[in-house]
Amino acid sequence: MDAIYKEAQQGAARFSVAAKDFWAARPDDTQAWLRSCLARTRDLFQPWCMEILFAAGIRDTVRFSELEALLGVSSKTLAAKLRILTDSGFLLRTVHDSQPVAIDYRLTRLGKHTVTMAAPLFSFLHECGERPMER
Image 1 (cartoon, rainbow, N blue to C red):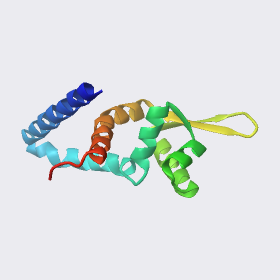
Image 2: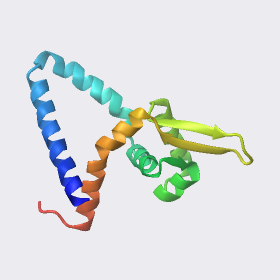
Image 3: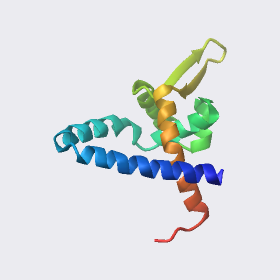
């Protein structure tokens, strides 16, 4: 796992440098691109949203009560965040015809790509929590 993490970290660093160089070569496009990126990330970077997506990605399919217990977030907040992520196209909500009604959430293609890109960050932050990093 350590080798895979290091490879992902190096790939992410190369991607960041390449993206920076790409946009630096197009100063006329940078402002419009940045505005578009920021607008697209408003829903994603709200409190609890990345955590919900990451948990859904790890579990494949997740229920409201599982997320509530796992994250320790209030039901009102969780319901609002799930609605945002579903409306934004990151999660798919499936209602099962059962008694009681069961509702599952799973990642859409956009959600899967997002979690894939965020996984090295979550791994890095986990590693930082286990070992103090130099400042």
